[in-house]
Amino acid sequence: MALALNIGKCTLLGNYRENNEDAIDVKTFPDMTICLVADGMGGQAAGEVASKRAIEIVPRELKKYLSTAVSNEDSKTIIRRSIVQANEEIMTMASLDRELKNMGTTIVAAVWRKGSSIIYITGMGDSRAYLIRNKKIDQLTTDHSIAQALVEAKTISPAEAKTHRYRNVLWKYLGSAEVGEGPEVKIVPIQAGDRFLLCTDGLSGVVADEQLLDFILQHENVQECADGLGQLALDAGSKDNVSCMVIEVVEAK
Image (tube, rainbow, N blue to C red; front, side, top):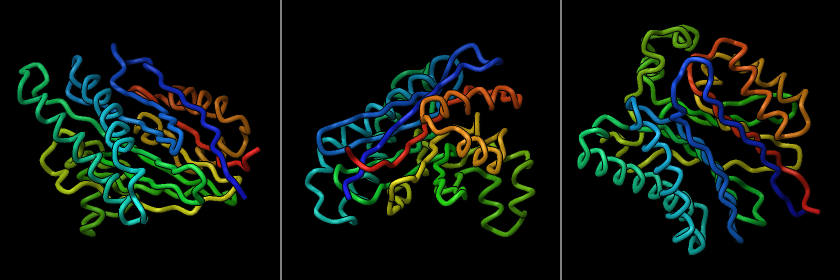
């Protein structure tokens, strides 16, 4: 059975910020679809520059190299390298321009090769990817925050991490030397009816996973769902920019 994707996307300035440092994009090529959500940081225009560059560089690299991949492992390596390349270019820009000195960005991406029954998911920072299937929600990415690192070291519990003072302090993001050889890339088998949510912490930081699940189950249209999730975050008191993308797997017509 051939599959296709329906995609809704939303990015909001929010009620507290003067500029939107988030960047989102869907790149559709003949052989692949790339969905990207990035949350810039660094103040003033720097965060905007970093997030915008990230969502430009990753598709550029994937368009160049992904069609040559013959195995899933090849594909994962090329996706990782695209993130590493974005990191190197962002770090170079920051080193050459004093005003961009502290810039960085998170990124979360879903990459689907046309005709495939799998999707690749990867992320850096604390923007997240979720899978909604069989009325359950699963977080597919791991936050690269200090609080999450403390959870993994068994110093604090996952419940404590949700309110920890370092929950928004990242130790790994695009624009940092810690990116190394790139992030983990997950292979997720897909089926008609699956939904994926890519979002910044402007949404996931204020709306609990169970609320995200309930809302997504109640809204069939992906664009209305994405717009509604953005508003849900603002109604919940989000003090950040809010960006999200809802990806629905359907049978191709």
